Image (cartoon, rainbow, N blue to C red):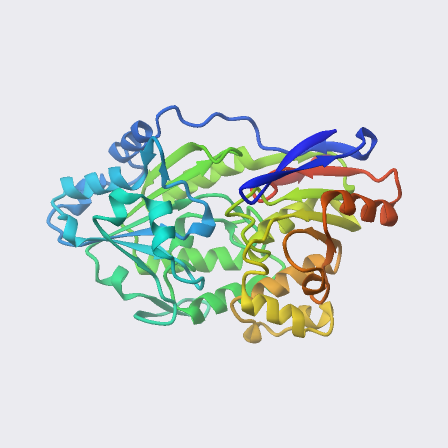
Length: 421
């Protein structure tokens, strides 16, 4: 079997004997929308559970539109559409002027966007005409009091001071938030570092899981935070494995998001019938494989198809290396995986939460990484390293024998594997 796997802006070829492959786990083949702009306008005209955005905007002066940072892969701009322009048209129809519309990049605790990243992600029509501001989790955040968990909700002042609040983003499965999109635009998108930290520290809770919303303490707190911060209107999209938009939902935060995550679950759910010795898991190319930190969804989705003691072969370019200094430092300083797993919740930092989450996986499986990261930098952090896919296959044969059984996941960061006996 031969298959091309995305690697940064290029690809790598995986060659395996047919005897070693149980199957290739991919999304259902659902075509992208033939006319994204038309579909978006229709969704905006017929919002779920609320008034049209243009009606909400009537009599109001200012608007803030939250947009996702570049690592989320939300397809805001393509040659034949720009998702943000129909939203602007709705705000105009409600009487809000250009100079009073601002775009707030929901970076969470990530770094600010560069000018080029703003241009590449949101398009010249937006960047040249409107102010695009990256959220800063360490500045200009205002307290809305404490959530039921005791976590203080500190939200970006620009959002709170705006008359009309619009949330946008991409819905995918998420390994500890259940699903991305929707309320996640608030927490972690535009809140203070400490609010993010306390939320993400709950990753040690056993109820945290992929595609789980209710009863997942991280997701539940995100829901509460979004309700408290106020979202007047939501527009989210779902994409296929070609990063084409297949579904657009618009309207009330809760109702539109539910329609979106259900569509996402139905599309991303991929059945498999037996567990494997190995999974060859590709992060899906740039920007999903920009760093090891951003490849965590891939790792956590891939683990679902394995027996205990098996191997994840992660194919991820990692042009920005490990990605998070805190994540890298936590893994480097830990004397063992058990030390990470025994960290008290109140001690877990942003970035540290990913190290703890990763330790859960590393405790059960080997993770062999094919990337641009130096071998010693990986091995010091409990990972294994391979220079190439071919070297990775030889490593696997040494561990599992020449008759190993494997799955291939070309877009492992997207799919939701479900065992069906």
